[in-house]
Image (cartoon, rainbow, N blue to C red; front, side):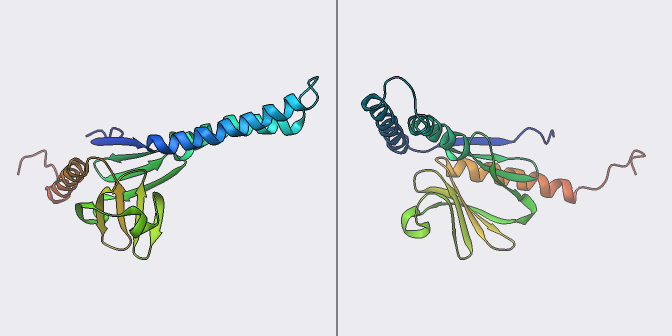
Length: 179
């Protein structure tokens, strides 16, 4: 199997309300910057106005690229988790470390204090929306909650990869002489 291609991959984004709030903040910043410019000297841009416009544009773009989505990819030997389109924030979990996989319904606000990358004693959550996740119990802490809209499907794909990995480890080495 080509390890460069995932067996399964899903990407989820922050809810529309989150994007609307961020867009509202950006519009307010842009309005403030332009309103200050219009009330001031119309003959040129000052540093404050330029900074306000740059912030209004870069804030949502930066958010989108760095933490605006969550991608979970299952490979033949690992699970890769990454935030944002750039994938600067990422984690890889070796399938040999996974003791069990279980779809769960949980309460992100009560159990983890919200969405995003959240850590509690013995547990860590990587989520962007909702209350559905797959809980990975590892051979050593922490447990990892992977937020997903398709928990049963993700569990099935992880279990499939684990079964294939165990089969390849237990299989005897190829013997060209057939003995």
